[in-house]
Length: 281
Length: 282
Image (cartoon, rainbow over all chains, first blue to last red):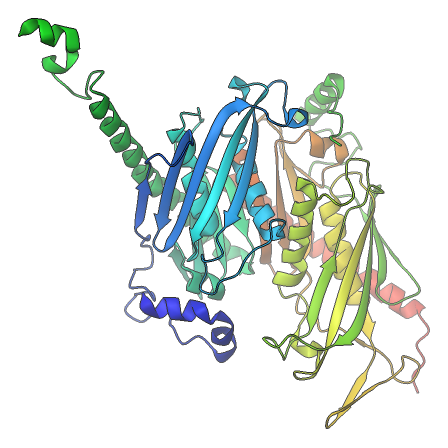
């Protein structure tokens, strides 16, 4: 792990001097000790952040992203409001300390604008916007730490934040990156691997298995592409399991804390409300 | 200024005709508009038109000092601001969502895919390199400006010739085009971009190279940039209608076929133009 951070600090020298780190060694291990198809540790924190209606902090290995969702609320900019559906507004802010070397990004940076436009167009067909005409749903993405898989983390965090805010979605959107190292496919790439091998980011809707987002920016042969594309689509479904259990545990924790409503699989005691219990004593 | 949405009769007419695989301009669903390439007097000046969509590309080169972190490579910059000349939807100054997509896509297809060899643009390491500047002017928007711009850009880069440079020790001599024949840029591969549009009704098949109306009424677009050697350079499906992985792969195969055809057309056209120019060889 420590080695990969040092390499991040000087990525340019690594590329011109040849890679000192093996992407996949003889024993089938990658530079951070994972196997070929092993995904990074994913942690999900759905605790409330500030005044947001819904928020999520998602980490994929060393990539940390925080997403806050406000809405649906009255459209602040009237000209952008649609008469029959809600307008989704996405703003992305990348912290200057998120990469190995501190770099302050301008607000109009094309890469960041593209990331925001990508997230917006990914969620537009998924969020049931027709239920909230003339409203606005604001999604604020804050990138805290980058170690590869940025779009993947942003999309997963946005899904969870939208679910946390109670905004109706057609399905979860789960994203994962995949790459090909000579002929071996790899999943969930770190920054080191992303700089070196051709990679693709795929977002799927797990219930139907359909793909909502595919982006690939590096050259890859068509035959290799088919393999990694199918693999990444399947990996998205695995992430779905993680996300669903996180949402379930958060909801049951909230329900227990509020002390109301029947507990999942609860018995007779749970069905009685406060008044009944008082009258018993 | 947001464009007025297409009217309900236009929408219904388009969807009903597409259901029967009839496009409004008479093309087949997998037929692109035939590209017309017009070369100017200067080398590196190309106007590309796909039907009524027109994009002008111009390449110029000058010698500059390279940045200290990359002393052995040349610099390639792409300038592509969409002015209201293309269509009154575009405002000067403020890039719309579509403009950001087009600019980033051009950057990925022409720069990030390493189409042009940057190390061959180095004249004197650390002191002098070529700065190749590609400027794109969007003249008219009749749908699918992205494909037109990518085609114009790559053809202009292939058409451009830079002056011959002689380096003796630390001295750099630039030869005039009349003295020594200018040399072409070292191009690794020729990427072509194809855009497919999908519609909300799943029974309507996807169409390639959408026109203005088809683009506005589409529920999602997928852009594929690839070269004739079956290598995918960029694949972009940003949201829109969710698709089965099989459908995506079917589209990729169609794009591979189209890339081969387009490559043949472009090579033939470049050769034709080059023969028409009077090149004096001493």
